[in-house]
Length: 376
Image (cartoon, rainbow, N blue to C red; front, side, top):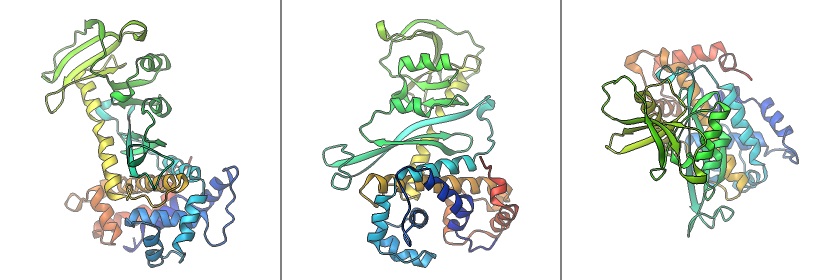
């Protein structure tokens, strides 16, 4: 590999100009009529702004030419960002997820991968996003994200204003090919019964005030795990809100000694495994923290829905490609030069990857990125 290969060049090999034109053509009511300022150029600017952590349209247009981007005025870039429907960038993200999909190692030898679902809130001053009122002086929006535990990368994302309840998005993001792992905001009783009927596996934390009716202890061989408090089947809730089916409930102590209560449809797994599955949910919190710290997510450039959501979906797309490249190369690098995901990104950003990484990167690119990445 040429050590000066920029991330943007790899990104363009995965998401080609032909892909972009196809996605634009599928967007009703929009035609990319710009001669110089096109959707493709807007994407290039967003990718570089995310990857290089630029802090706005002004800085992007000032620094862009240094990274091979055509010179444009910041008002032109801002106007284009507000004009282009953000659904185009959302579809770009979804296409990249399909292209970067890969076989994953099963967690705890389970038959299905875990799908970790949660949301993160991004806020700004009311004056910047009046269309998304949140608190007294703040506006806000949410990204509802489903992260594959095996791939350590998002596989589906829905957007909303911050005042929207998380619970309905749990159903939207559900996927029977995975085991859902969710926090208590998603633990609606009627939804648990629906999951059982539809064959959707799940491990979901229950609210502390829910009643457990007619509990029956499950007799399982002891595993020597003292964190397990109780393993039962029961009805959940009372009166009209009571579940129609008996559900398995496992109670265990977390690292702080607090009792956590989760409900699951997994009957053949031990209580220890159920507890470990729920603890894996922490990975999505790490993901949220990572993109906010390293991909410029809290620094919103625009003020319109199109500009804001477009920037966020591009940031998620950048993460997907970065993670795919890292996971492809990392296992083949000697132990003494291994890098964390963050270190890999930092070294690549300033063209200082160790020689061993450059060699593996060359092999990766010589195979043909699009031959390694699955094409839907």
